[in-house]
Length: 445
Image (cartoon, rainbow, N blue to C red; front, top):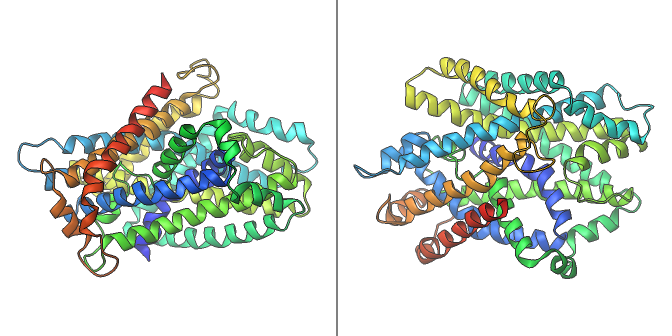
């Protein structure tokens, strides 16, 4: 259970509770959900078993895991350094966004929205972004809290806190979903969310919908940067990895799905478009909570849920970073924690300043910020490339090899990975991943 909650906590984050409802609303509701589930099964689950297998077979973090399993003279471990860069870049903006969630939890808890009209509530989000002090303080709180939990150790710190957070998170989202679905007009939101609308898909474009679903399946599972592999390195040999992977994917999908049950009925009940991106969470929903009966309570619960979901990912990625530093530099856990407290705080500052002091720097065009560049590098480059490297390492003779991967995955009891999957993971899955990488790079030009 600790392993499942840790791994699911890594997967469950902003991709589920913020990005999934927004992307679903943008790409046509139910039909996008179907594509997402399809790619989660045919792409996400196989790659996750590979990351777990490499981690468990090596008992090392991402760089050392490839060094442990590769043949003499091979360079697969270079992907480990790319993965570590991905972990750091992910945390460079993830800590800041988690700080947003934490700040809005504070605002809801202390009733700072009370008595404000719609425009005043709307202005609170850009006011927060324009304040380097608010963003820096909340980011530092998040980094310090994450490092402190990791400093307590895997079981006494990360596992214990993650179990509590995940249990509370699951309880809160069910309460919020039931409340949201009972709102007047909420059924229309459920229809939009759950019923496929192929006409809307055609208006947006079939390929756009398909590639968005593929990207979401990877972003939500945090695959390709060793964040899952580190927990694979801690698990014993009693259970087969496919069953564990399926359990994690189900829990991850459950949170994403129920997040939609919170967002869409609420939006339709208050006649709000559900495809607004960040504004939906930090502008529209606070206005809704401010106008509904008991809104302060529901708003506080919602942002507790958002903060827990984001912080569970931070704990998992911090653990990966700290473990890798311990492996590479032979540091003690305490020294690795102190060093990364300093490093991660400094590296997170560009994202903080990107909305205020450095707002003139717009790396991806008008209206973009440092966060958009960091998000692009992780989501469109490092995650799919890292996943492709894991696949090629596990299925080709030039790497670890399919037989070793299959034997490790099927060690123990539980759901067995069939040998017949070899053709698919060797020839088809790499093509899908290569397409995903190429599409992301082309779209950025």
